[in-house]
Image (cartoon, rainbow, N blue to C red; front, side, top):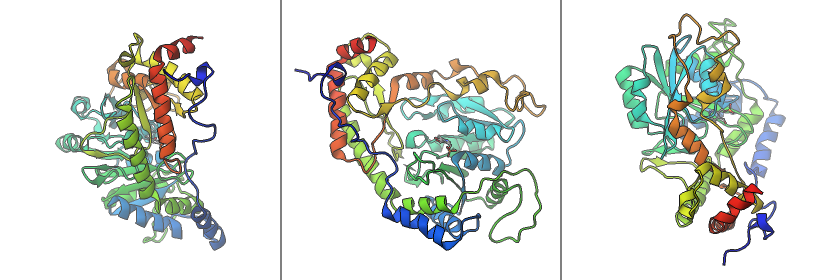
Length: 426
Ligand SMILES: Cc1ncc(COP(=O)(O)O)c(C=O)c1O
Protein backbone atom coordinates (compact mmCIF):
# COMPACT_ATOMS: atom_id res chain seq x y z
CA UNK A 1 0.00 0.00 0.00
CA UNK A 2 1.21 3.50 -0.80
CA UNK A 3 2.55 5.31 2.27
CA UNK A 4 0.68 8.37 3.49
CA UNK A 5 1.70 11.75 2.10
CA UNK A 6 3.16 14.26 4.56
CA UNK A 7 0.67 16.77 3.10
CA UNK A 8 -2.05 14.33 4.22
CA UNK A 9 -0.80 13.88 7.78
CA UNK A 10 1.95 11.31 7.07
CA UNK A 11 5.61 11.53 8.12
CA UNK A 12 7.86 13.73 5.93
CA UNK A 13 10.40 11.63 3.99
CA UNK A 14 13.27 14.10 4.48
CA UNK A 15 14.06 15.37 7.98
CA UNK A 16 13.88 19.11 8.58
CA UNK A 17 17.34 20.67 8.15
CA UNK A 18 18.70 17.62 6.28
CA UNK A 19 19.35 19.57 3.03
CA UNK A 20 22.60 21.50 3.49
CA UNK A 21 23.08 24.80 1.69
CA UNK A 22 25.65 25.68 -0.97
CA UNK A 23 28.58 26.40 -0.95
CA UNK A 24 30.31 24.30 1.70
CA UNK A 25 32.84 26.55 3.45
CA UNK A 26 35.96 24.98 4.95
CA UNK A 27 38.79 26.07 7.24
CA UNK A 28 40.92 26.43 4.08
CA UNK A 29 38.43 29.02 2.77
CA UNK A 30 38.54 30.93 6.05
CA UNK A 31 42.34 30.84 6.09
CA UNK A 32 42.51 32.05 2.48
CA UNK A 33 40.30 35.08 3.15
CA UNK A 34 42.05 35.87 6.44
CA UNK A 35 45.44 35.74 4.69
CA UNK A 36 44.26 38.61 2.45
CA UNK A 37 43.23 40.56 5.52
CA UNK A 38 46.66 40.05 7.04
CA UNK A 39 48.54 40.78 3.81
CA UNK A 40 47.27 44.33 3.43
CA UNK A 41 46.67 43.75 -0.33
CA UNK A 42 42.93 44.38 -0.56
CA UNK A 43 42.50 46.06 -3.89
CA UNK A 44 43.15 46.13 -7.61
CA UNK A 45 43.24 43.96 -10.70
CA UNK A 46 47.01 43.61 -10.30
CA UNK A 47 46.74 42.45 -6.67
CA UNK A 48 48.31 39.03 -5.97
CA UNK A 49 45.08 36.96 -5.76
CA UNK A 50 43.58 38.67 -8.83
CA UNK A 51 46.63 37.73 -10.90
CA UNK A 52 46.84 34.23 -9.47
CA UNK A 53 43.15 33.59 -10.11
CA UNK A 54 43.47 34.85 -13.70
CA UNK A 55 46.44 32.55 -14.27
CA UNK A 56 44.79 29.51 -12.71
CA UNK A 57 41.41 30.04 -14.38
CA UNK A 58 42.98 30.42 -17.84
CA UNK A 59 44.97 27.23 -17.19
CA UNK A 60 41.87 25.37 -15.93
CA UNK A 61 39.64 26.39 -18.86
CA UNK A 62 42.42 26.07 -21.43
CA UNK A 63 42.55 29.63 -22.77
CA UNK A 64 45.41 32.08 -23.14
CA UNK A 65 43.81 34.86 -21.08
CA UNK A 66 41.43 35.20 -18.15
CA UNK A 67 40.18 38.29 -16.34
CA UNK A 68 38.67 38.56 -12.88
CA UNK A 69 35.63 40.78 -12.44
CA UNK A 70 32.86 41.37 -9.92
CA UNK A 71 29.91 39.48 -11.49
CA UNK A 72 28.78 37.32 -14.36
CA UNK A 73 26.76 40.23 -15.71
CA UNK A 74 29.93 42.35 -15.78
CA UNK A 75 31.78 39.50 -17.54
CA UNK A 76 29.13 39.34 -20.29
CA UNK A 77 29.17 43.13 -20.65
CA UNK A 78 32.99 42.97 -20.91
CA UNK A 79 32.61 40.33 -23.63
CA UNK A 80 30.15 42.46 -25.62
CA UNK A 81 32.41 45.53 -25.34
CA UNK A 82 35.59 43.49 -25.85
CA UNK A 83 34.23 42.09 -29.10
CA UNK A 84 33.50 45.61 -30.36
CA UNK A 85 29.72 45.19 -30.33
CA UNK A 86 27.92 48.52 -30.03
CA UNK A 87 24.83 50.64 -30.75
CA UNK A 88 22.30 48.92 -33.01
CA UNK A 89 24.32 45.71 -33.31
CA UNK A 90 22.37 42.51 -32.70
CA UNK A 91 23.33 39.58 -30.52
CA UNK A 92 21.49 36.28 -30.87
CA UNK A 93 20.88 34.44 -27.61
CA UNK A 94 18.61 31.86 -25.97
CA UNK A 95 15.05 32.69 -24.91
CA UNK A 96 15.67 30.46 -21.89
CA UNK A 97 18.28 32.14 -19.73
CA UNK A 98 18.64 34.48 -16.81
CA UNK A 99 17.69 37.97 -17.97
CA UNK A 100 21.12 39.42 -17.22
CA UNK A 101 22.48 37.65 -20.34
CA UNK A 102 20.34 40.03 -22.39
CA UNK A 103 20.78 42.98 -20.00
CA UNK A 104 24.55 42.92 -20.59
CA UNK A 105 23.88 43.28 -24.34
CA UNK A 106 21.49 46.20 -23.76
CA UNK A 107 24.04 47.88 -21.45
CA UNK A 108 26.19 48.42 -24.53
CA UNK A 109 23.26 49.73 -26.59
CA UNK A 110 23.16 46.51 -28.59
CA UNK A 111 19.99 44.51 -29.18
CA UNK A 112 19.27 40.95 -28.04
CA UNK A 113 17.49 38.72 -30.54
CA UNK A 114 16.10 35.53 -29.04
CA UNK A 115 15.94 31.96 -30.31
CA UNK A 116 13.87 29.09 -28.90
CA UNK A 117 15.47 26.07 -27.22
CA UNK A 118 16.03 22.47 -28.13
CA UNK A 119 13.79 20.95 -25.41
CA UNK A 120 16.07 17.94 -24.85
CA UNK A 121 19.18 19.96 -23.99
CA UNK A 122 17.20 23.09 -22.91
CA UNK A 123 19.90 25.18 -24.64
CA UNK A 124 19.58 27.34 -27.78
CA UNK A 125 18.43 25.34 -30.82
CA UNK A 126 21.28 25.70 -33.37
CA UNK A 127 18.89 24.89 -36.24
CA UNK A 128 16.89 28.08 -35.55
CA UNK A 129 19.82 30.52 -35.39
CA UNK A 130 20.49 31.16 -39.11
CA UNK A 131 16.97 32.51 -39.74
CA UNK A 132 17.56 35.16 -37.04
CA UNK A 133 20.79 36.49 -38.56
CA UNK A 134 20.36 40.00 -40.05
CA UNK A 135 22.81 42.49 -41.51
CA UNK A 136 23.06 43.93 -37.97
CA UNK A 137 24.03 40.65 -36.28
CA UNK A 138 27.49 40.65 -34.69
CA UNK A 139 27.48 37.73 -32.28
CA UNK A 140 25.85 34.56 -31.04
CA UNK A 141 25.60 34.22 -27.25
CA UNK A 142 24.75 30.61 -26.35
CA UNK A 143 23.98 29.93 -22.68
CA UNK A 144 25.15 26.71 -21.01
CA UNK A 145 22.08 26.72 -18.83
CA UNK A 146 21.94 24.54 -15.71
CA UNK A 147 25.53 23.51 -16.44
CA UNK A 148 24.49 21.83 -19.73
CA UNK A 149 26.76 22.78 -22.65
CA UNK A 150 24.97 24.13 -25.70
CA UNK A 151 25.61 22.20 -28.94
CA UNK A 152 28.64 24.28 -29.93
CA UNK A 153 29.76 22.70 -33.23
CA UNK A 154 26.68 23.77 -35.24
CA UNK A 155 26.63 27.12 -33.39
CA UNK A 156 30.26 27.81 -34.33
CA UNK A 157 29.49 26.71 -37.90
CA UNK A 158 26.65 29.29 -38.24
CA UNK A 159 28.99 31.88 -36.73
CA UNK A 160 31.75 31.08 -39.23
CA UNK A 161 29.35 31.15 -42.20
CA UNK A 162 28.09 34.61 -41.18
CA UNK A 163 31.29 36.14 -39.79
CA UNK A 164 29.93 36.30 -36.21
CA UNK A 165 31.69 36.25 -32.85
CA UNK A 166 30.68 33.56 -30.33
CA UNK A 167 30.37 34.60 -26.68
CA UNK A 168 29.59 31.80 -24.23
CA UNK A 169 27.44 32.54 -21.21
CA UNK A 170 29.05 29.90 -19.03
CA UNK A 171 27.80 31.59 -15.85
CA UNK A 172 26.25 28.28 -14.75
CA UNK A 173 28.84 25.95 -16.29
CA UNK A 174 32.18 25.87 -14.43
CA UNK A 175 33.93 22.66 -15.46
CA UNK A 176 31.25 21.35 -17.84
CA UNK A 177 32.69 19.94 -21.06
CA UNK A 178 31.55 19.64 -24.68
CA UNK A 179 33.29 16.80 -26.56
CA UNK A 180 36.08 17.03 -23.98
CA UNK A 181 36.65 20.81 -24.12
CA UNK A 182 35.62 23.02 -21.21
CA UNK A 183 32.87 25.59 -21.62
CA UNK A 184 34.51 29.01 -21.81
CA UNK A 185 37.02 27.69 -24.38
CA UNK A 186 34.48 26.69 -27.04
CA UNK A 187 33.80 30.09 -28.62
CA UNK A 188 35.69 33.39 -28.84
CA UNK A 189 34.96 34.58 -25.28
CA UNK A 190 33.68 32.84 -22.14
CA UNK A 191 31.83 34.44 -19.20
CA UNK A 192 31.36 33.00 -15.71
CA UNK A 193 29.47 34.09 -12.60
CA UNK A 194 30.87 33.25 -9.17
CA UNK A 195 27.85 34.35 -7.16
CA UNK A 196 26.78 32.42 -4.08
CA UNK A 197 24.85 29.70 -5.91
CA UNK A 198 27.42 28.83 -8.57
CA UNK A 199 29.56 25.64 -8.74
CA UNK A 200 32.58 27.94 -8.23
CA UNK A 201 31.44 30.44 -5.63
CA UNK A 202 33.06 33.53 -4.16
CA UNK A 203 29.77 34.81 -2.72
CA UNK A 204 29.86 37.21 -5.68
CA UNK A 205 32.35 37.58 -8.52
CA UNK A 206 32.94 36.85 -12.19
CA UNK A 207 35.53 35.39 -14.57
CA UNK A 208 36.17 35.97 -18.25
CA UNK A 209 38.21 33.97 -20.80
CA UNK A 210 39.57 34.27 -24.33
CA UNK A 211 42.44 33.34 -26.62
CA UNK A 212 42.22 36.70 -28.40
CA UNK A 213 44.61 39.42 -27.21
CA UNK A 214 42.59 42.26 -28.73
CA UNK A 215 39.34 41.17 -27.01
CA UNK A 216 41.29 40.74 -23.77
CA UNK A 217 42.68 44.28 -23.82
CA UNK A 218 39.33 45.83 -24.82
CA UNK A 219 37.44 43.91 -22.12
CA UNK A 220 40.00 44.96 -19.50
CA UNK A 221 39.35 48.58 -20.49
CA UNK A 222 35.61 48.23 -19.95
CA UNK A 223 36.37 46.64 -16.58
CA UNK A 224 38.16 49.77 -15.36
CA UNK A 225 36.82 53.15 -16.49
CA UNK A 226 37.77 52.82 -20.18
CA UNK A 227 41.44 53.08 -19.22
CA UNK A 228 44.23 50.61 -19.90
CA UNK A 229 44.88 49.11 -16.45
CA UNK A 230 46.96 45.98 -17.01
CA UNK A 231 50.00 44.67 -15.11
CA UNK A 232 52.28 44.93 -18.16
CA UNK A 233 51.37 48.55 -19.05
CA UNK A 234 52.19 51.80 -17.15
CA UNK A 235 48.90 53.55 -16.29
CA UNK A 236 48.23 56.64 -18.40
CA UNK A 237 45.14 57.91 -16.57
CA UNK A 238 43.57 58.40 -19.96
CA UNK A 239 40.14 56.98 -20.83
CA UNK A 240 39.85 55.66 -24.37
CA UNK A 241 36.08 55.24 -24.12
CA UNK A 242 33.35 54.50 -21.62
CA UNK A 243 34.11 52.00 -18.93
CA UNK A 244 32.57 50.82 -15.69
CA UNK A 245 34.05 49.80 -12.36
CA UNK A 246 33.90 46.03 -12.49
CA UNK A 247 36.83 45.19 -10.17
CA UNK A 248 36.39 42.40 -7.60
CA UNK A 249 37.68 42.54 -4.02
CA UNK A 250 40.71 40.45 -3.05
CA UNK A 251 38.58 38.67 -0.39
CA UNK A 252 36.40 37.38 -3.23
CA UNK A 253 39.40 36.39 -5.38
CA UNK A 254 40.88 34.50 -2.40
CA UNK A 255 37.64 32.65 -1.71
CA UNK A 256 37.23 31.68 -5.38
CA UNK A 257 40.85 30.45 -5.49
CA UNK A 258 40.28 28.33 -2.42
CA UNK A 259 37.00 26.94 -3.81
CA UNK A 260 38.75 26.24 -7.13
CA UNK A 261 40.92 23.69 -5.29
CA UNK A 262 37.71 21.67 -4.73
CA UNK A 263 35.79 22.41 -7.96
CA UNK A 264 36.64 19.08 -9.63
CA UNK A 265 35.76 17.11 -6.47
CA UNK A 266 32.48 19.00 -6.04
CA UNK A 267 31.57 18.58 -9.71
CA UNK A 268 32.33 14.84 -9.51
CA UNK A 269 29.93 14.56 -6.55
CA UNK A 270 27.24 16.51 -8.41
CA UNK A 271 27.63 14.14 -11.38
CA UNK A 272 27.47 11.06 -9.14
CA UNK A 273 24.28 12.27 -7.42
CA UNK A 274 22.68 13.40 -10.69
CA UNK A 275 23.43 10.09 -12.43
CA UNK A 276 21.91 8.18 -9.51
CA UNK A 277 18.77 10.36 -9.46
CA UNK A 278 18.25 10.16 -13.23
CA UNK A 279 18.60 6.36 -13.18
CA UNK A 280 16.14 6.01 -10.31
CA UNK A 281 13.62 8.53 -11.65
CA UNK A 282 13.48 6.61 -14.95
CA UNK A 283 11.49 3.99 -12.98
CA UNK A 284 9.09 6.44 -11.32
CA UNK A 285 6.03 7.27 -13.45
CA UNK A 286 5.23 10.97 -13.79
CA UNK A 287 8.64 12.33 -12.77
CA UNK A 288 11.82 12.31 -14.87
CA UNK A 289 15.41 13.54 -14.65
CA UNK A 290 17.21 15.45 -17.43
CA UNK A 291 18.38 14.01 -20.73
CA UNK A 292 22.14 14.27 -21.34
CA UNK A 293 23.22 14.57 -25.00
CA UNK A 294 26.17 12.35 -26.02
CA UNK A 295 28.34 15.41 -26.62
CA UNK A 296 28.01 16.75 -23.08
CA UNK A 297 29.46 16.19 -19.65
CA UNK A 298 27.36 18.70 -17.69
CA UNK A 299 28.39 20.05 -14.29
CA UNK A 300 24.80 19.99 -12.93
CA UNK A 301 24.56 23.53 -11.61
CA UNK A 302 20.84 22.74 -11.34
CA UNK A 303 19.19 19.36 -11.31
CA UNK A 304 16.10 19.62 -13.52
CA UNK A 305 12.95 17.56 -12.95
CA UNK A 306 10.28 17.03 -15.60
CA UNK A 307 6.64 16.36 -14.69
CA UNK A 308 4.64 14.04 -16.97
CA UNK A 309 0.99 13.77 -15.85
CA UNK A 310 -0.09 11.17 -18.44
CA UNK A 311 2.34 8.61 -16.94
CA UNK A 312 0.36 8.69 -13.67
CA UNK A 313 -3.04 8.67 -15.37
CA UNK A 314 -3.78 12.35 -14.80
CA UNK A 315 -5.72 14.34 -17.39
CA UNK A 316 -4.13 17.68 -16.46
CA UNK A 317 -1.38 19.85 -17.94
CA UNK A 318 2.27 19.24 -16.97
CA UNK A 319 2.14 22.61 -15.16
CA UNK A 320 -0.89 21.60 -13.07
CA UNK A 321 0.73 18.30 -12.12
CA UNK A 322 4.01 20.06 -11.37
CA UNK A 323 2.48 22.70 -9.09
CA UNK A 324 0.49 20.11 -7.15
CA UNK A 325 3.50 17.79 -6.88
CA UNK A 326 5.76 20.65 -5.77
CA UNK A 327 3.42 21.40 -2.89
CA UNK A 328 3.35 17.77 -1.79
CA UNK A 329 7.15 17.41 -2.24
CA UNK A 330 7.80 20.46 -0.09
CA UNK A 331 5.65 18.89 2.64
CA UNK A 332 7.89 15.80 2.29
CA UNK A 333 10.89 18.01 3.06
CA UNK A 334 12.18 18.01 -0.56
CA UNK A 335 13.86 21.26 -1.59
CA UNK A 336 12.14 21.81 -4.91
CA UNK A 337 11.15 25.02 -6.64
CA UNK A 338 10.79 27.12 -9.75
CA UNK A 339 13.48 29.01 -11.73
CA UNK A 340 12.19 31.51 -14.30
CA UNK A 341 8.47 31.95 -14.93
CA UNK A 342 8.60 32.96 -18.59
CA UNK A 343 10.96 33.23 -21.58
CA UNK A 344 13.21 36.29 -21.18
CA UNK A 345 11.64 38.05 -24.24
CA UNK A 346 8.28 37.88 -22.46
CA UNK A 347 9.51 40.03 -19.56
CA UNK A 348 8.20 43.60 -19.35
CA UNK A 349 11.51 45.13 -20.36
CA UNK A 350 11.08 43.53 -23.81
CA UNK A 351 7.30 43.91 -23.99
CA UNK A 352 7.56 47.64 -23.27
CA UNK A 353 10.94 48.18 -24.99
CA UNK A 354 11.64 51.15 -22.74
CA UNK A 355 15.39 50.57 -22.37
CA UNK A 356 16.96 53.44 -20.45
CA UNK A 357 13.73 55.40 -20.64
CA UNK A 358 13.32 56.71 -24.19
CA UNK A 359 13.27 53.46 -26.11
CA UNK A 360 17.01 53.18 -26.81
CA UNK A 361 18.60 51.05 -28.12
CA UNK A 362 15.58 49.95 -30.21
CA UNK A 363 14.60 53.50 -31.20
CA UNK A 364 18.20 54.54 -31.89
CA UNK A 365 19.09 55.50 -35.49
CA UNK A 366 21.73 52.76 -35.59
CA UNK A 367 19.14 50.05 -34.90
CA UNK A 368 17.28 47.95 -37.43
CA UNK A 369 13.69 49.16 -37.23
CA UNK A 370 10.71 46.90 -36.57
CA UNK A 371 12.24 44.56 -33.97
CA UNK A 372 9.55 43.14 -31.66
CA UNK A 373 9.41 40.33 -29.13
CA UNK A 374 6.54 37.87 -29.48
CA UNK A 375 6.31 35.14 -26.81
CA UNK A 376 4.57 32.89 -29.36
CA UNK A 377 7.95 32.51 -31.07
CA UNK A 378 9.35 30.54 -28.11
CA UNK A 379 6.84 27.68 -27.61
CA UNK A 380 9.46 25.15 -26.51
CA UNK A 381 10.82 27.50 -23.86
CA UNK A 382 7.27 28.11 -22.57
CA UNK A 383 6.55 24.36 -22.48
CA UNK A 384 9.87 23.62 -20.77
CA UNK A 385 9.31 26.21 -18.03
CA UNK A 386 5.76 24.93 -17.50
CA UNK A 387 6.75 21.29 -17.11
CA UNK A 388 10.01 21.54 -15.12
CA UNK A 389 11.15 22.21 -11.56
CA UNK A 390 14.52 22.38 -9.85
CA UNK A 391 15.68 20.04 -7.13
CA UNK A 392 18.05 21.82 -4.79
CA UNK A 393 20.59 19.98 -2.67
CA UNK A 394 22.19 17.84 -5.42
CA UNK A 395 25.71 18.76 -4.31
CA UNK A 396 28.10 18.03 -1.44
CA UNK A 397 28.21 18.10 1.56
CA UNK A 398 24.83 16.42 0.98
CA UNK A 399 25.25 12.70 0.46
CA UNK A 400 23.82 9.64 -1.24
CA UNK A 401 21.50 8.98 1.74
CA UNK A 402 19.78 12.28 1.00
CA UNK A 403 19.52 11.43 -2.72
CA UNK A 404 17.85 8.12 -1.75
CA UNK A 405 15.38 10.04 0.43
CA UNK A 406 14.61 12.33 -2.51
CA UNK A 407 13.89 9.26 -4.66
CA UNK A 408 11.62 7.84 -1.93
CA UNK A 409 9.71 11.12 -1.77
CA UNK A 410 9.29 11.23 -5.57
CA UNK A 411 8.06 7.63 -5.47
CA UNK A 412 5.52 8.52 -2.79
CA UNK A 413 4.21 11.46 -4.83
CA UNK A 414 3.97 9.33 -7.96
CA UNK A 415 2.07 6.52 -6.19
CA UNK A 416 -0.36 9.00 -4.67
CA UNK A 417 -0.74 11.21 -7.77
CA UNK A 418 -4.54 11.50 -7.66
CA UNK A 419 -4.47 12.38 -3.96
CA UNK A 420 -1.67 14.91 -4.60
CA UNK A 421 -3.97 16.66 -7.09
CA UNK A 422 -6.91 16.66 -4.64
CA UNK A 423 -4.78 18.04 -1.81
CA UNK A 424 -3.52 20.85 -4.05
CA UNK A 425 -7.13 21.95 -4.62
CA UNK A 426 -7.95 22.03 -0.89
C1 LIG B 1 22.86 32.17 -17.12
C2 LIG B 1 23.32 33.34 -16.29
N1 LIG B 1 23.87 34.40 -16.90
C3 LIG B 1 24.30 35.47 -16.21
C4 LIG B 1 24.20 35.53 -14.84
C5 LIG B 1 24.67 36.75 -14.11
O1 LIG B 1 25.62 36.46 -13.13
P1 LIG B 1 25.77 37.44 -11.86
O2 LIG B 1 24.61 37.21 -10.98
O3 LIG B 1 27.06 37.02 -11.24
O4 LIG B 1 25.83 38.82 -12.40
C6 LIG B 1 23.65 34.46 -14.16
C7 LIG B 1 23.52 34.50 -12.69
O5 LIG B 1 22.74 33.88 -12.04
C8 LIG B 1 23.18 33.33 -14.89
O6 LIG B 1 22.63 32.28 -14.27
